[in-house]
Length: 140
Image (cartoon, rainbow, N blue to C red; front, side, top):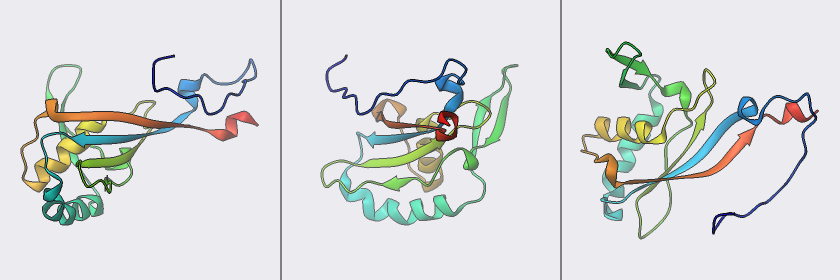
């Protein structure tokens, strides 16, 4: 096991169970904005509230044909929250499985920062997956 990985629980699945990938319901992430000072909280908190209240949030994405299209991502994640950390600027969110896939958390943060009027260099993000949530109904 890589250093820092801790096994919390182990369970066996019946041979006829869906694969773990198909049981995945959500993934929880922390996204640290390395270039942001914690003092920026007071400016971004109201913008975060407005962002989370939106019914539609769009990103630009290339489709399989290479054409840039607008895609709505609002139903692909929980609210984006500011983690209480006096020394770092960290956002948290839960990404929901939609059409058998998860949207990348950096796309969510990028959409937020764009709407808030801040430039975001993707290289300054440190994304950490904190938890995977499986469909517990499969176990029955």
